[in-house]
Length: 90
Image (cartoon, rainbow, N blue to C red; front, side):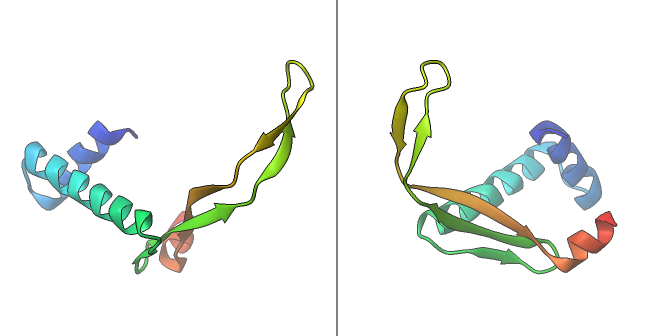
């Protein structure tokens, strides 16, 4: 499912126009992104938690040349599914 398919499903489920569903989805994504940029986590009960994790700096290898390179530390997004989501899948 891509973003357009998701918008179609939201529009059908919530009895909204596709434009309204698209704006709602964009607003939700923007809000989650802004919270994560501040270092906050976003918990949607029954669905899961979006959070930011820190990945430490490490050494890696260039696969083409075999040369050792330094990979900088980074902040990466993470998602931990909630119990209801896990139960729905099993």
